[in-house]
Image (cartoon, rainbow, N blue to C red):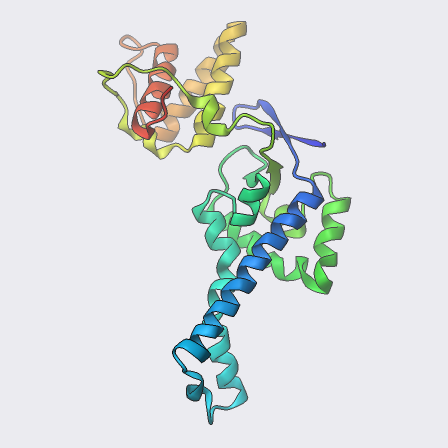
Length: 249
């Protein structure tokens, strides 16, 4: 299985397994079946259960088409909405254990998911041939939407879940210091802890300093260095995040 080295803002590469074309196609098929099931149910309710078919009588072709589009509208926005709500996954992707991520190491935003969705029309044209060819020839199995949004689809199989790498033991009477940490995502905290752990092993004070400055910049914090060292600060941030998000052992 091919891998992608995601370069974080701290200039550290982290390897992830790239989701295979087959996995992505199966996820697409699962999502397609869900959308087809929705269409069948909504039309059954409209025409049979509520017997609203008479509303279409006398309407011109464009008006009838508008009603059909309105009824099936959730199908069109299915990918972008669910990927935004499920942090880069749809039910199909979740079942296949794959996820959309930013190549720069950060959590993909709604704008990224929107760009991927907008390019879906091109990727799925010609029965999906364009998207399939793009995934086959691109370095990271990216379809055009992925390339445009700077994202890739990774496999979560046989990997430690992102949240597992941010766990930290905290006592029941622990008192947090920085409520601002809730602005961070699981992916941000995984990057912070991973880089911090690596820096500690080799006593890389420069990385620790840069990491501390980056966290302070993101959270807009000003820390008196005489009261808390950079290492103490990063330790507290990690513990605080675990405290507020309820991630404990």
